[in-house]
Length: 296
Image 1 (cartoon, one colour):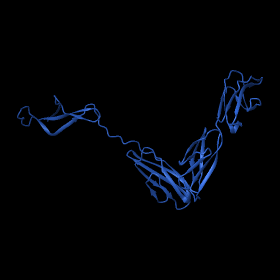
Image 2 (cartoon, one colour):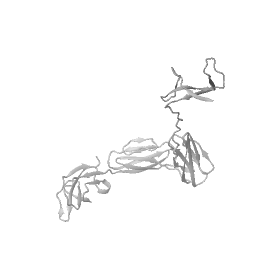
Image 3 (cartoon, one colour):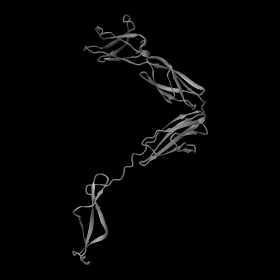
Image 4 (cartoon, helix red, strand yellow):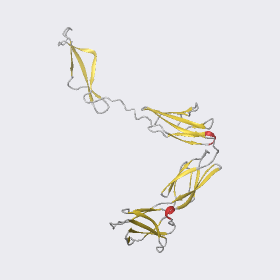
């Protein structure tokens, strides 16, 4: 049996493959000398069902499934052995399964769970999507805590970043020393300048107040015009007359960060600074005196 492919010429049937390629139908024609010739002669007949698809340069690809989840979660321990969990998993999981290590499970994004006793538990979160499965486990200590309001904070520049760590549930009400307020769970607050400020968190009948010290750094810079110094002396004054040496830095160093807490500058008035080089032979002349209000 002689089997050969013959491309049909003229106007072929074109199939849209969905990615810009063109496809043509190709018929497989069977040449069999033992069979009777067709009425038109030539001894060829079209085999039933022998229709194939020639895609040329076009390729067929399976739709991508996407990346599997990266499972992760945060939690907050509340009073009476209640823990509030929140999935922070990446890559959009479609299914979640929590295992609380005490025979109980959950499938919501942010479940609450009350443990029967104070103990150490290993909580596992499994996250799944079309791309696969991800898991993560965390060990946590569950205690029988009383109800209270509390928070932590970090300071960067004039801005404080607050985190609610209260064991009592409810809408938080934040009040700050400049009279502003917030109802965010974990607010960010920019204070007007250096110094002592305060923040108060109230939840129901519980509250906590803390002092927030803002002490931004003033960066002093100068040009090194000497080639044989052992270092530089940095001096400070509140009136430009009486001077106190703040610090010394090594040879080749041309910056120094000044803060209120460490260096005792006054954020409410002008502060004066000057620098000079020194070595075994003595001190150089002072650089230009610079003044700045550190809390401005």
